[in-house]
Length: 628
Image (cartoon, rainbow, N blue to C red; front, side, top):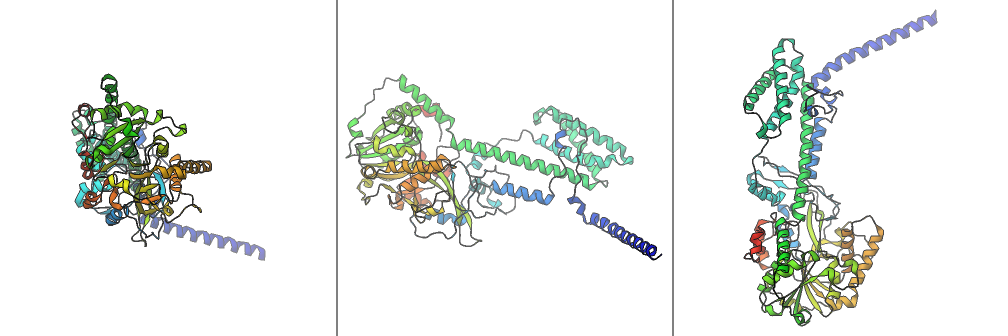
């Protein structure tokens, strides 16, 4: 009896606990709906009206995507990752001063690696002030074909200037070549179709609104049919404006009834996801087009090269070359490595124009076989004062190392690292380094009788007489170059650290380099470079460009003579904030960076320094529509 009584009490206890649980649940569930917590938990499923519709794919998006908060975070991360590299206004003076001046200060904060980022297509200016935050990064070497990530403050009051500073000269080009949208009405139709599909299921459940349900269904089907037949406004039927009015009237009436908010929420989330995917696609497409514009030869320059080549073989012009001048060590010799006819012409014209005695100047242009005859024909047609010009085909020269007989231009690398001592002032600062390529290490063998040469990059403009460079006492150094202590070897994460590397050593720039060929041969600089290059190659895991950079920096460590800052100003191919007076006082201007002056995307305020040294009277320029 006692045992039976105990079992009854336990059963009653379980029943009481169960009732209490049911009471608690019945209280919490309505409360959760009142607070809107159910919106964060979506049941799996699809929302469709016409499964056989050609635009069915728009509604076949799983409604179990992330919540609104997660999506907004993801969109923010996407936009932040696609923000291009632009110097901050707060860094204007520091960049202009540090890039071309030897400094002893060393940044306390070293950056973290910055991944290559994508250049976003500029969006219409809004009326708010937005700030893209930028996290610090350990300094890294990235090929200059990429754009990096850096915070920028956008002020909508100066829309055009802000767009130019944030996205480069692409903004100016876009405004000048802007065309009206050809699918504005089509996009509006898609928006209305999405809204109608969002309200249709709720309206269809109302027996008293059968007419509205029928009208909505007819309008949805009509819009789907029209969109399936055309993708541009020109493909739409003449009476499409009336269909717009009918659809808007139906949607307006549907909004006046209480509907299932969960269903509308799912549809709007689908629109958000599709918009994010479309924005990502256009951003990536914009990056591809931008890189195509800055890395490939423009069609007009290719036409110029082909026309000059044909003209060379058609013409009966007799070449008159003063071979004695080409090997006379008492004259002033300049070397230009280039495959760009216009760029080489500007370098030579600007150098000879400012020379006290141009008859003592000898220019050696190293080019490849494809542009060799075009380059020769150009300088036959356009001689430069009394200077002698020799064009050499590097692929046909008799050299010991045949592996390096392929023309390689000075390599440019993007370096980004954190600056600032505290978190509030930190930001990614970006520089473009231009250093020797493998073709530079052939100079002692190509010019065996010469003792000293000045190497000029083809993106350089000369503004002063360079004759005094031959009078420099380089104190036993091999390479005279302008140093930049705003970037040091310690900032380069990809450079293998070791006893051979001085972390505090300042980096030097190509563009204007005084080369002591006699000292070069004595120290075996070319052999040292090949040794370092092979050692780095054996490690694997890195690109050839990065390995060549490391080998070059190691080779010229302690062999660079620092030239005065006024000999060269660099950054005209990426930095918008170079002081005008600094440019006027410089002996040479270096357009290192992606925005070269012969491209449409070049920085407008710097183009005139380059353009005024170009001979525009040549008929081939007009025939090929060359208009830098």
